[in-house]
Picture 1 (cartoon, one colour):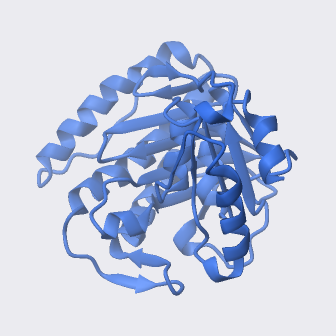
Picture 2: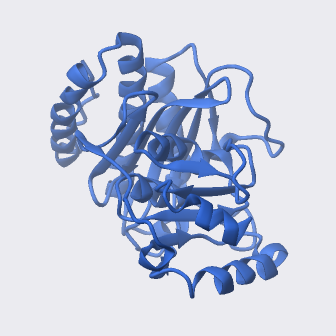
Length: 292
């Protein structure tokens, strides 16, 4: 059974924790493999723990520093990463952790099972008071993500998936859309932090895609974009120059929801690639024709 530490200073948070404990009971029946269920619960507990912290910190003054010209980091990023690391370390001490704020600059795909963590995907939204951000936790093993959890704290939405078990939102199974034509498709994209290096390519993609689709959204958090493709709110998402913690969990969510994830040209995806295209599968060839 999933347990949470109680904190008398945050009684409201304890209520949310209790509610999610009830929601996660669906895993007893839906995820019969005990070891797999243990990993899903570990991912969910870590994501929820960080999400409750972010909800509590949202709308308050933040300590902001810069990792690049427009790439922000706050005390919330650091605090939630610490909490996630502690949670995963307690639940799965045998598994390594690769997390955004503590990762080396030179990234390489791990040779051993590793949790890939984004403690706050959408920091710019968080800082500006835009309630679109998420916590992302994925377990990669032998090049495949086996378990995933994405929590959107302001919407109180917990997405999770495990290999072969489908994708879920607050205990309900989800699936991608059945949209067949680009003109009917609502798609999303994002822009690189190093926009000056990619400006021409980004603008070319927008000129190509915008007249062909119903509309384009720019959420500002790749984990949210991928979760929204998985549950059918978006038909597709593409972006370049992302990091593994941006996409690892979302990759599995989309696949388990019946979608397809590749690079822009349709080649098999890994979170350590610099570009991602995720779709409902039916649109995928049409999208690679435009982006590849």
